[in-house]
Image (cartoon, rainbow, N blue to C red; front, side):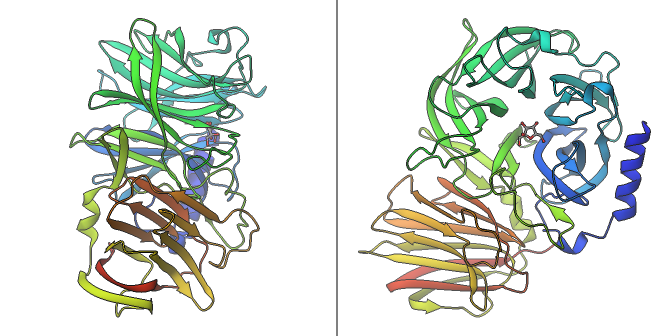
Length: 479
Ligand code: FRU
């Protein structure tokens, strides 16, 4: 083990426990300090493994390490020692994002972007047993000279690796000679020697610059490519400006090795979401976990905080027609501590006995009637709340954290025209301390958000502009 890795593991040990009181129950955070993208999400030796971009030394982004947690149910995670530190000449400027795969030899392979002192981004390997990882002695394995002529060697990162028909494949984010994002496809027989296959996907529209953190898999009868375009100009009713996460349904044309895109949807309409990864879990479900922050929102003041950044709850992806819907994994029910189930009439502002807290799963449904406006204020205290508002006339859901007590002047509001217009609207709000995830109409539209409301703000108000019947289920979450 290098002295840099030894030191950082020691630093973590010395600081372990300090941040425990700031941790959500189910959302992965670093032991201490800053995290961004999920990395190396995988099933290995019957356990779920998640790694993440990690800077334990502060609550700001810095030289990237890979933090590591493991779980049996994707909800209760245990820390393992940091897996990778920037301790080689070829990754001196950071071990950037990447993925993991299990080898026939039984080893767990991590493929990551190694950034050298000149800022060149190349791809490297580390092999391990689920606890300790050793970098491959012939790193980097996909180098600047393997990038097509004219494309960027500074923006060449985030390999997603998989194996098919005895061959390894990797898709990697890149930028072409026109400063537009593209995804490159590589292949290898032995994991060590790689050859360029094709420009798998090219952003020919005006959809941002670099494409970060690609994921590729099949779902039912379609192939799915997830990309994270940077510097996007807002696209009405679908994408906000900045860094976004897009999911394309389409087909990998095996003759041209080009991904033929058919549909495009935003994966998350909230304020805090980016760079997700997926796995096929032990039950055969396609599970997605993203970073529950975004480069545009990650500028908040970090005063008195020992932790910054977390990952979303695991969500199951399913195909409903041409829409991919996302819902929290059902195992969350194993952590229900109380059950309140009722049908009630609401008019004006209503608070219900025992319906309060900062760790809960709330499901609501109501029949739409003329001009209905239905709001929920969560994490509510005196003069402050996080607002979720459904408007029937516009068929929109708005989330607004302007008044949750934060002290940053930035965008706090998102409004989205809902995917479908149903007679009955269903809202599910999952709150785990500062994490608020909203699933509308059984996962058709998802909004992930961080609230900056103090933990003691734990009231919930329902506000309607007219008398309506509401069905409600409320469960406190506990470990
Ligand atoms: C995405 C990203 C990746 C990169 C990593 C660096 O959030 O910019 O492209 O590998 O973060 O931490």
